[in-house]
Image (cartoon, rainbow, N blue to C red):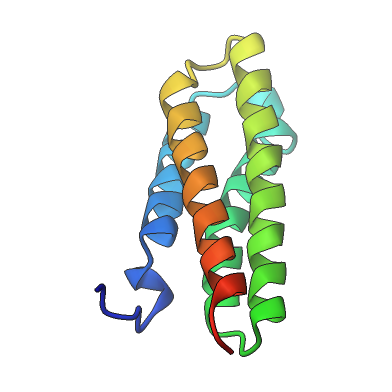
Length: 121
């Protein structure tokens, strides 16, 4: 049996989300300057929100409160998924590798949320 996480940084789902943030920042550096306050900003905000909400939810006391933050993270993940489609369609960058990471995070997030909701208080 795995040892309980002592910090959000111990969570595999957060670690993967953080890696996606780093990749998103790297990817968006090549976007046109005209996108600096538009797509670049929105894309970075949405992907950062995934990891940030996992972190924020970690210390919440009740299962419902924890699950609410994980649900917000899932919403941000879906927003990020859309931006990756848009970035690809605009031909700003190749997004398939990051899309695979996002899919993995989505599955981990769903499993983590289910585990939280099914755990004893």
